[in-house]
Length: 297
Length: 297
Image (cartoon, rainbow over all chains, first blue to last red; front, side, top):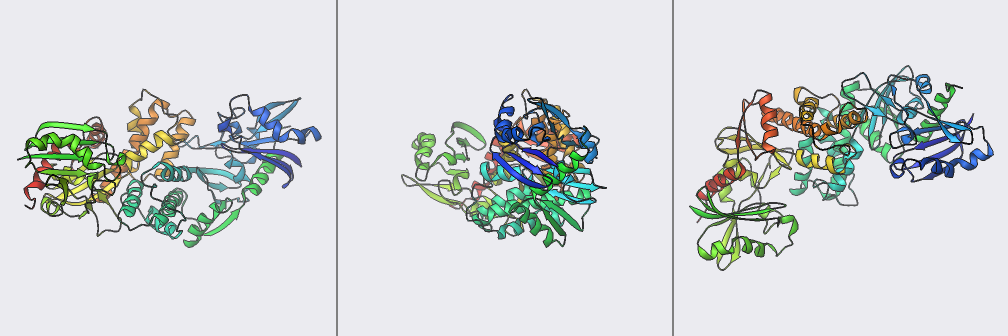
């Protein structure tokens, strides 16, 4: 099946003309939803996809990610987790994209029935395309997701602020200020070891973060190691949290491209956990294919 | 005893003309060490204290806080914890302040013998002046300190990034962006309850921080509650960490002024823990008095 897929994120838009799982053409820019005002989305869409649709007016169009968020083109209400391709397809939001055409926005997922709220937009599609029927999937990113798949459906998930907090610490904090480049990647393992992964870090993360500052002040931690140290500390905290929630797995599937995937692969394999890596575009297209199979006519 | 005390912090300088524990005169400005270049400290000191010393040339002068840091007037090497007033007095750094006079810089403390590095500058003086001979003392701030006093000496301490992380989240993060004023202080208890205080929060702090964002996105957490919620969450994590390190106490002394002290007092009393509050200027002067008693001639 040929279709147009638009992966519209906070900071980027990526439009793909797809045949099955094969990309025929692509168009990208930094017109993410955070840069756009209400009413500007249609023009951005046309700029990226107009030529393809002029040539093939009947192409299905599917939008995924932040396109359906409050800052997006139109609000696509979250589907409730647990959900599989069928439930997500049933919750697609149709919008008018002009010239008599409609596009479908993939809804995100929400953990509605649990004590802690959680949400995702876009990752549900990667999860459905991850090839994991039963098992744990990790999606690194600004807001890292860990999800438990059961019977090919997203059964439960949890989000960790890992990537955003790393950025805050590096760009705005006293802790990260002394960090120097080129980075000494040996710091990652040291930071990982200081996390709660091997057992409760007694003082907790707030104490471990200050210890990184104290380490640089006292010369125990070189400025070159500091960035990887903070990355290792936060990654270890995240993995420890995911394992407390879902149990320690024998195998994890990581959906990410290098170099971000590499950090998780190294950290998990060092713990004796088997890791399968799937590239993000591959899981996006496989996930959209699965959803489109159930798309209401 | 009459003396001049200068509490030189990162963002403020506060100079006091003291008689015992009584403040005779004071002079403050925002010339904290972070604003000054090497070589500028003497002039700032003169502007604040010159008139007092002109009138009483023999007054002892003692500097405390960031005056002895790398960005300060002169580096005052940390004393090693455990330490009491006698050890800290023995580690005072003398500097020339002109006209044949010297001043003493109070050294900070470092936890040298432990796995995790930790440091303080200034809090050691408040601890010695806290009136606590044996027990747990909490010093809220950008970098909150908890210290165990034994026999009137600082036996052990741990620092938590609570205040700085709260600021990062409020000013720079996606999590804190929706926060609205006037704040609804009921959010503090909700955030405290979401911390690991009552038992391990399964997903850990990185997960709990994102849950605050998901809560606002899904309408479970109002924008007015968000700021106090984050404050409660981080405060709960900090107190939980301190109690894991030092055991759950029956009584805690908090060295802080309102409104910051109030947050800790309410949170701790709600847990059935007795709280004594000491004002910062009172503990500063009592601590300096204790150190000066042992000052080498």
